[in-house]
Each structure stands twice: as structure tokens, then as C-alpha cells.
Image (cartoon, rainbow, N blue to C red; front, top):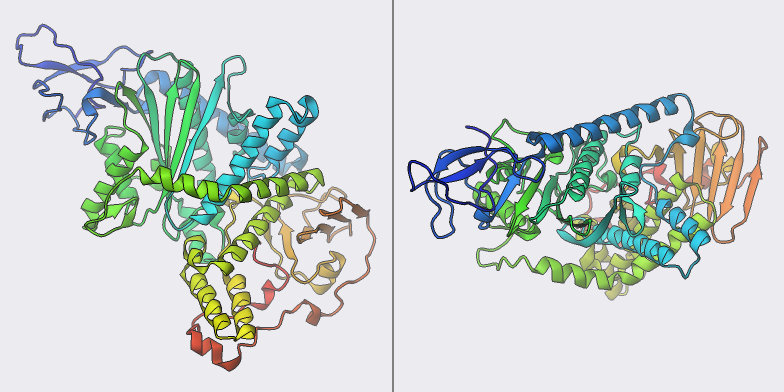
Length: 590
């Protein structure tokens, strides 16, 4: 079968030998720059509904007669832009990889940087002032980033909708801006030489898809244009789940195989792109389902099973008078998943047969949650700004933000255990519920022990992406190193596997941090630095020993909770591993 993309947005009858047939556009050349396309004859379209035609892939979307679906890889105009973006991304990666090998870490950028936006808007503040629109717009972007992090964390095990944001293309700079900050730079920063190979491929996919959208923004169109992407949970995140269920898995949610649906509406007249996302469980909307739906709408051809990374690379371009929206596409995915699983699927989850499938709830429910979490977003923004103002190292600050969010979420579910299953998992929810029961019975000591146990064993909620943070659990550091690091009970202790010491150039740096300080120590040259995040004071010593805070190995050990009265048996947690000794000084945010 020839490549078939979709019915054109307008069909006009032409003079042919058979007046009962109408021409249908076949091929990728329907957008402005590429005017050539093949014609084939099919039965006439009656009552505005498509009819069967052996040459045409029937699109189940009800709007099929009014728009076309284009695969940019088969469109010369867009294919060239995509190939150039991929080439640029690979060259950028090669250059950064060489810098890393040569030890030029100062030239590197962090692909995941909690302080990146705060640093940029601080520069805007210094140039334009706090009352300037430039600063206010930038800070709104920071708060929006924080709001999104909370939304993801609160709904890690359920669907969540992320409201539409506006990205504006500035032709003079050839860049796209969101809240006054360049999206181009953010995507290029993600091309990290230390990301796991699959994650690097996904980031290159993002760069190529973004280049596609930019080209669409640059090109005038008489008809509305939109794009659709599906980004499945990557394979490396599933491996991470197998190896360490408690890990944050780079912000992915392999426990429900979560994927993200991206929908961009492109306004070429005003050079605006309106971006919205919907995160949904992939337990039933599998890669097979995703591929079949993309094939059904004509975004790709029939082909052998695709990998997650290959699906991630697909971007479908829609053009026509009456475009679908993100919920229309979600409906397609749900229907295909229902058909293949034999279950009734709504927003990726199994529902009863009589459950109303009202996709408008994604907007109303998400907005309600956003308003409820507004104070948390502002609180987190202030915390990030404080870390940036105190000069905290960007890499460790990212970990501090994750630890901060982890602690706040644990505080929240301790008071409201009904939220724990959505934020963490069922075992954590069960433990917090049990703690409430024990409190109600007056067994306060046992309740406190159960809360400690629940907090210690709750999964991490972090979002450091792609396994490229380079900061690993400092579980096996010697008491001597911990003493020189001035680590205290409850500190998060990490080893830096990527960044060299500024004094000696060796990759032997370790960190210890809590809510009020960050300590940094090099095991090679004894260089030590401590930043007090609460007071702003910084103490620095080069090559000197330090007074020992922890002198005995027993000081580093945390006693196992004493579950009196057979609480383990009462609660039925015999199968749960007891807290491991090596997690003593690490805390829950590592």
C-alpha cells in the first residue's frame, strides 16, 4: 500500500471520466511549502463521512474529513530540518563528551538543574529590577515549574493533566521563549554526555521534535496546525524499578508504566505554540496500543513492533479546519486499550462498565488540585531561590530540592494517609493508616515507630533525569571520612562520581547535607567547604584536618525500631525488609 496520510481538509470535485469519483490527496505534501502530492480516485464522500477506500487508511477520529495527518519524516521540507537538528544534537553531545574526558567540567551544563531557572531570573532581577515585567514573568515561570513538580509528585501513580502553557517564537533570535526564558537552551542542556544511552536518545528525540515545531511556527499556514506525541516510560526506568524499587527512577513511574501525551497547537499568525500534557498509566495503553493508534490515524505506516524509543521519536502533524484535541486522542488510546484487553479503560485505568467517560474532568479536576497546591508551589520557589542566593552547588541543590519535597509529602500523608497510595505506594499507605489506628488506640509509642518505619521505606519522589546526576548513595563511607565531612545523624550523604575537586582535580568529592547546611569534602586532598543555607555563612579549609564529630562506628548506626507488643506480626509486615544499616546517614532523599 502506498503511503497514505489522511483525507485532505478540503475536497473539490474535478473533471474526470467518472463524475462519481473525487480526488483524494495521498502523500505528505499538503503543508504550505510542499505542494506536490499524488491523486487517487475513491468513492465519493457522502454526508461529510469518509467511505471505505482500499487506498486510504480509515481514521477513526470523527473529524477525519476535515484534517490531514502528516508524518514529517516523509515530508522533504520538514525532514531536512529534523535531520539538521539531530546532527546538531550529536555534535553537541560529542563536544561535551570530549570536555568531560579532558576534565573541563567548568564548561559543562547540568541537564537536570533545580537552580537553573532561579539563577536566570536572578540575573533578570539585577538587570531590570524586581518591579519589571521581565522579572515578574520569569518568576511566574519558576513558580509554574514548582507547581508542575508538585502535580507530578502528588499524582505519580494516577493520571494528571498539565495545563496549557504559551511558548512564543521570536524570529529575530530564532528562539522559542516560555515565561521569558528560552526553551531552546533548556533542551540543549539536556544533551548530557553522562546520560544513559537510551535517555540520551530520548533527549535527541525531544530536540528533533522541538525543531519540527519551530519550523511549523516559522511557516505561515492558512489552516490550524497541531502536533501529537506519545512519550512512553523508558526501558531503563523499568530496569531501575527491578534493581531498586525505592528509587525515584528519574522522575518516571515504571510502577504503572506511565506515559506522557503531548499536544501542541501552533498559531503561526501570532508565532505562539500552546503546549499541554496528559500523564496516564501505561498498564493497558501499552506500546503496542500506542503504535496501532499512531498507525490508525496515519502518523506512521504499518511496521514491525516498535521500541519505546522509536514511539517516543514519532511526532504527528495535524492540519485542517476542525482539529481534534488532547482528549480526542486520549479517547482513541482508551478505546484501543479496551478492545485489546477486554476491559473498560478510561484515562488508562480500568473502570466499571457504567462509568461515565467524561474527558472534561481532566481540566476541572487538575485545576482544583493546582489551586490546592498553589501555596506549596510558592513555598518551593522560595526554597529554591534561597539555595541559589546562598551559592549552593547546583548539582547538590537538585538533590536538596528532592529531599525537601520528599519530607513535605511524607508530612502530608502522615496527616492524610488516604493520599499515600497515589503519592508513594500501597505498603506506605497501609503503614500510615496503621499508625493512625494505633494513635486512636492510645498506643502512641508504637504509632511513632510505625511512622518512622513508613517514612524510611517510602519510595523516593525525585526527578533527577536519565541516571545522569552523577550523585550516588554514600552508604559505605568510612567513619573517618564521615567525620571529616562533619556528617551528622539524619544527613543525606552522597558521592559525586562525575565532578572533580576544584583543588586537586580528582573525582573524590563527597557531600553531606540537611535543611540548614551543605558540607563538601575531598577524600584526596582534604579540601572542605561548608555552606550554611540558613545563615549564608561559608567556611572553607584547604588540605586541613577537622575536628571529629563522629568518632565511633556505633555513632553512625541507627538502632532498629523496637516494635513492642508484636507490632510486626499484628501489622502483617513479616515480608518487609527491616531498614538496612547502610542507610543510616543517608535519609530518604538520596
